[in-house]
Amino acid sequence: KKLYYRLKLLGRGLDNPDQRIAQDTGEFTDVLLEFVTTVAQQVLLILVQSGILISISRDLFYFIVLYSLILNVLSFAIFGGPFTRLRRRVLAQEASFRFTLVRVREHAEPVAFFDGHHFELQRCEEIFAKLMGTLYRLLAISISFGMIEAAAMYVANVAPFVVLAGKYFSG
Image (cartoon, rainbow, N blue to C red):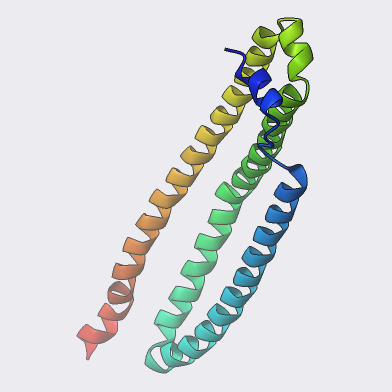
């Protein structure tokens, strides 16, 4: 009981905000570099494969371009906005939760003296419950997007045969 106060007495730092900021900045830089590299590689791959695909069948090339555009527009329109909003909300709620925990740790002595651990526990549980609710909504959107993505992959596997079937059977 009152572990927050015992941690304060032990003097062990559980989390350093400056260190967290430095870690987050490093992770952001790594992710950004990976993203730019991946985009450059994929653009080159698209250009090379487009030339090959046009030489095989213009109809198939146009179908694939149209199919890709439609999927991308639908993905961004249906999932992009809600996903981004929920990610921002998760980040804000995580920050609020961390702040609340740090505040309890920093003010452990007055909380213990005035027997305020019930209030602090309730506050932490409320913030954590909101965070978990947001994470569940984010999970639902991710699963829905994954299912639609899987269906789109099945269509992409069958569509070339359907597009080229007429030319094949006509000779």
